[in-house]
Image (cartoon, rainbow, N blue to C red):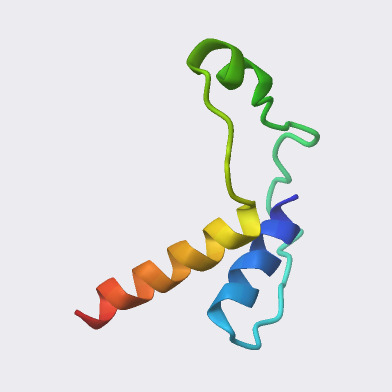
Length: 68
């Protein structure tokens, strides 16, 4: 879910951030999920690391780029 993705980003940042929802805005399409079986079938690709590890590595890389 988007909340879970936000929680991973917050964890990677090491910051104490509270998730807030603005329910006055449209909620968008619910229940849409990526189906990676087609990617595997067509491209022969499948993720080799977890989303959590990838988010952490991406956050650290972006933070380093900002410092430069």
